[in-house]
Amino acid sequence: MSLISYLHVVLTTRLAEVRRDGERGDSPVPTAVIIFGLVFVATIVTGLALSKANDWMTNIPTHTNPK
Image 1: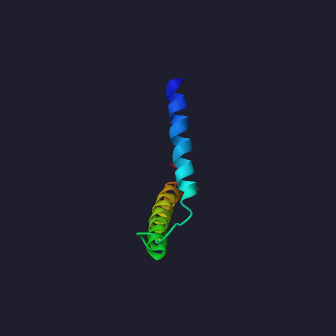
Image 2 (image 1 turned 135 degrees about the horizontal axis):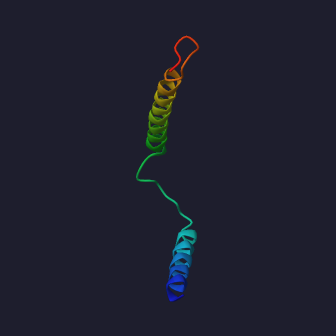
Image 3 (image 1 turned 90 degrees about the vertical axis):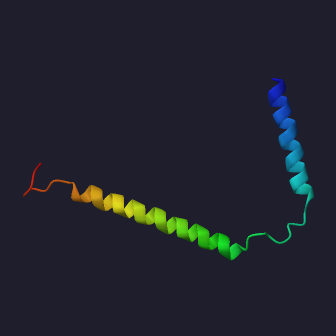
């Protein structure tokens, strides 16, 4: 139980520190770079999903080629 209490105190303290710092300031990574990274990863994931779906669809037997 003391571990849970300790984690609660640590989390509460950290959240209070984050909320107290109202000045968010400049990010070390520009927003445009973050957005580009997200779009890049989303494109890769979509391409992989499309590739897997096409592979799956080509393995479905047809009436002329039952497996």
